[in-house]
Image 1 (cartoon, rainbow, N blue to C red):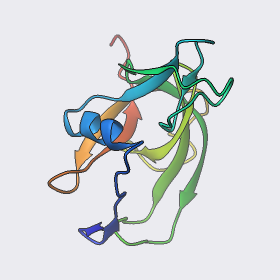
Image 2: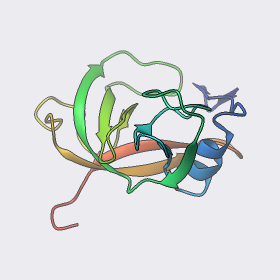
Image 3: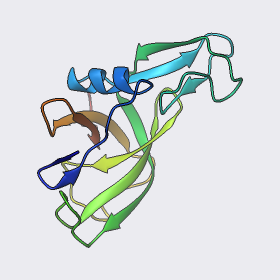
Image 4: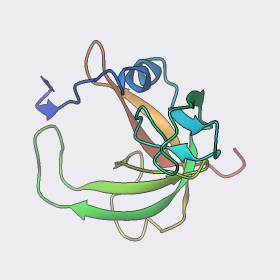
Length: 138
């Protein structure tokens, strides 16, 4: 699926609830009832213990910048420069995403900087979870 030149995900039975959550501006993760592991991406079993006893819950939407690279080359749906990042969510899992609403420079993108989720609606059915710097005092 393509919208505004950007390739978009196609929800599967395993990811449908995640994408329904982002459409409502909620970040939905899974927690294993057996070992308490929080998993992302969504799947029908726990990545740690293989239990199928997983539940969905709304994450707090906060995390920290774990790693990133800045692309200085435009791509479909992206204007260069743009950050491709790995965010370590407060609940534990890491998520690949983009950092928005700040300069796309190494000076502005500091490892371990606090981030919060924001959502960008890119089609009638898909809103992407992106991350922006958390304002001090929030």
